[in-house]
Length: 300
Image (tube, rainbow, N blue to C red; front, side, top):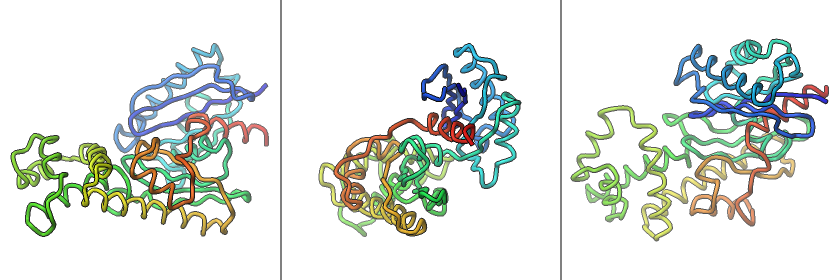
């Protein structure tokens, strides 16, 4: 029997699971952020290794019994951080085969139960990715909030703030987003948005405004609906670009990220444009996707 470890380093939480070759979770644990861009590489490595040790302890398994480890960490894509990912995993599982990945690849593998298919992700950021039967892997988007991330939480929130500013100027008709934003942020008037936005880093706070956009779009506000429709169109465009770059193979589509997890104006519009009958439910979480990559490597 093979025993592997899956590591999912999300933006706010890192999870580790000890999994056998029947996909039975023998032990698991979680900790704080493991994004090296947020915590720093040394602190992120310590957090990941401590969580893996806790998962091993719960499973009553020693590091020497682990055959392989799959690891995907936000902010540490294999394309530019492979050596660091290997060092982190080897530091706690020195005898295991390390399978460095990315947070989006393990999410795709978990969602489909295999490394094949297309994943559309919309959370704080956004991207689409996919893998075909030949093993080719493609990522579209994921450029960050300054260069892209259309359809993401930050993008929706930012577009809501812009809509409020334009309405305040009279460049656009009034929108129900304006009083909702001012109430949420405890601001007296539209002009106060300037001081709030530029006084400190606001990425997470702007992304948190996405829920207001979805709520007001569902209620019929014209500006909110236009934002959602544009965001959905961009996510669909990314998914279609993945399919095109993978040779137009017919591939199943899965969703990830908080904005696409449940039915709402954004997820329903993306479903409609991609020809999906309902919001797809992931087969497994990303941490199991990382374990699946490790099991595949252990079987090679």
